[in-house]
Length: 90
Image (tube, rainbow, N blue to C red; front, side):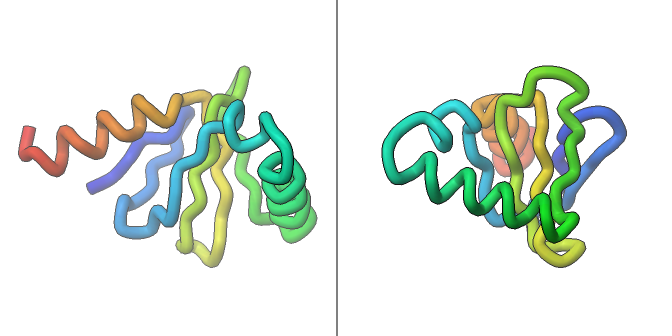
């Protein structure tokens, strides 16, 4: 199955490692430090692709090509719903 992440970007679900909400992943305590460090490192490595086009809501970590972080305006709930529809054969 493929997931549309915004603009013209589509990823294969088998390549998705995780989907993370930017508000909760960068909102409190130690999580904010770890997430910021991870995103900063990914940016320095050239592994961040911003497909949000506007206010980002989540990021999707994939392992193809290599480790890539897609910043998207689509919420984690919407991504989950899209994946669930495919899994249920709808």
